[in-house]
Image (cartoon, rainbow, N blue to C red; front, side, top):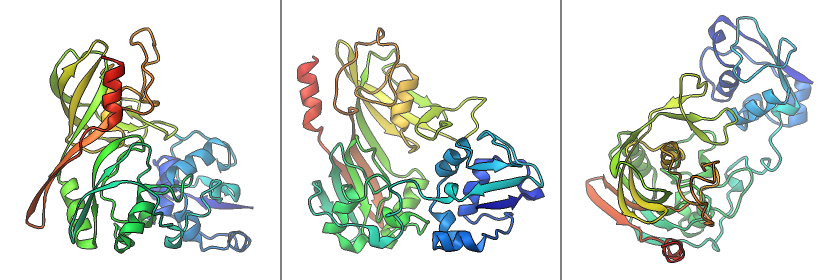
Length: 349
């Protein structure tokens, strides 16, 4: 059982994975879809509900695994569609990945009062917290109940439903920015829709100042500077890469200002200020300079002879400060370095 789509002139010239992701987002110029009745009955959902649950990465995996064909042939992710191509999507490609089935609606959000985090400040519009390392910001298909959001809705249930109204925004109520699981530090959460919209606009217009502290390998040649290197998702969507001439995924501008605060024998403590806020931006930028963040399991130097590898339980990256003006009030919040930074200094002077 499969769904066949005949592409039109409007779809010609588009990458197949981007085209399929567009189906879920109801973009314009897409062909009308008619799901086989048996497929709808088997899935127990509307056609749009089926597509809404799938991400571009899901479609990419299905293409790689041959569950999505073009003109009955397996193609690469970079395949460029032509008019009247027949895209065949099997039932298996439309199935949610294992473990994702429970993430479908707001009823799946599970309050968890056992999630520990410090509330630095709260008023009627915002909540400011200090996120510990090792804690996911919001639920995903692998983890449903042990995230910051689960803890937040247990303490502040009024944030449920606050968001940008996109397909999966209910999984991150009040969240206007994120920290990676193994990054610690200060975060601001919107307590109502008005403050959410205002904060998102501030982030969009780069009016929120964020400073991070990171321990990186080696000693940087330039003790201060600006890293201005565009980044994009890798072909397998698992990490970021510095964009180049052959990059086929979406390229985003990325700018990081930095200065070295202290140098040690084999590493340096740096302060980084985000001008843009891309996924993994600080991590990939310092990796690109040849000075990856200590403890980073993804962006690390393969040549172990260049730096003696230091055994850290997580990447030593901490969101130390956030500053902004919201609804006529100025805010500045700081988070002290967590204890694992001090332990690191003690063990590796």
